Length: 548
Ligand code: RAM
Image 1 (cartoon, protein in one colour):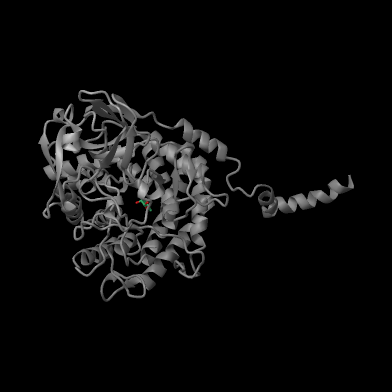
Image 2 (cartoon, rainbow, N blue to C red):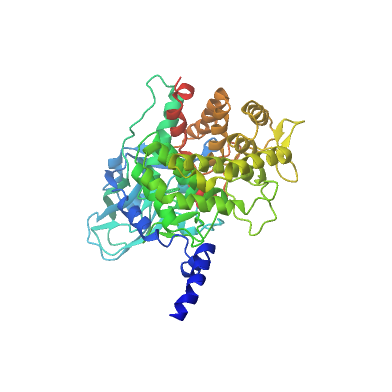
């Protein structure tokens, strides 16, 4: 009895300070985690499959006028791939006519004599002509060599149906004969890929009178998005095959203006929440197989973009239950980001640990102004989300903080003489600094428009290195009324990829450097990359800008 009497004040102390709760449940999401993962599983889409066959026999040709120095030339009808002596041809290329993702199988047969020995072959699946033309070894890339899609296979006897265990993502397939017996000849009798995606046809399409280049960009954007929409939003079906928050945000924007598979967005939001860290911080990405698990990595910009993705999801679907469920996650990302602000409301580069800031793949790009702008933008979006959910009380201090941050940004990053935002010790002028300062409405939009238009006309300015970076620049141009510039940037940048032969849009594209790679090998770049699909969003969200 006595003990209970002493325990009551102690219990009260723990409840009031929250210490007791933490001591017993250090996991911020302990009460909800299992339910979130269950809901993610329930929202998992069924994959739609279709059988794809080669549409031509082809060859790869070195050509300095083509992208990355290689082009594929169709040489024959697809039936010329079959029943032809592999001993004579040694190597054959099949063109499937479009980018596909799925399971490949092939039937090998003898031509005459029975098979008296195994056969050794190399199959190389390629998104791009360069992957057919250039040897993969010695490999110089920073990411695993195993991402490259070549397989050495040994066929034990013939006829034999080979089905590769690994899902592949490609347009072209090269088959090379490496070793066989002199006693018999062999051929391909049939081949196919069971291609998969969780979507098939878009619900929204541009008006018939839309300019043909814009329609083409829209179609290629749709193909890109479709390929990346599997049982999660993947960043790229060739590589990394993972759900990254930044990619999810842009894919879900494009999905809302095309396929409208809201259940996939819901699944991804729940998965990220269910696999967040115990302190409430989101991990930047999730691998789905064999069971969903997070890669142990945090990127501050992506944490904050989760809140923006959640707001968009709620606006597009009206699904308050999901948004309310995940509201604690949004609050925790704001909490995390606030550690990085100094008293004046400025992102403090001395706070440790400094987290990875993605923003773009571009060497020497200074991210200070961009993270300040993105934080301000994401805090404002979180306030909007709070309003829709009736949770304003949880963020009552944010509006004043946002005001303070904008003032700090103007004092620290804005150069009134030049009329642009600068970032870093070298006072770098970049497209993305202007974009994030515009999206955060740090200055009146008229002045943001001036900063943006000065920057995009400045040949010395640091331009983005990826479609991901360009997305935010176009969003900012539209926001401050620079519609013609937005359209020109979209048709110039994405149109550049179209001109260079893209079937799907690329992870990295620098019009001035065809072999650019953040991984020290253009062969391991992803050439069907989710974050490049957003013309679909722009073109269909803003018909008055892009469809006239
Ligand atoms: C790469 C991918 C992915 C991106 C991350 C940060 O692995 O390009 O799309 O989100 O980096």
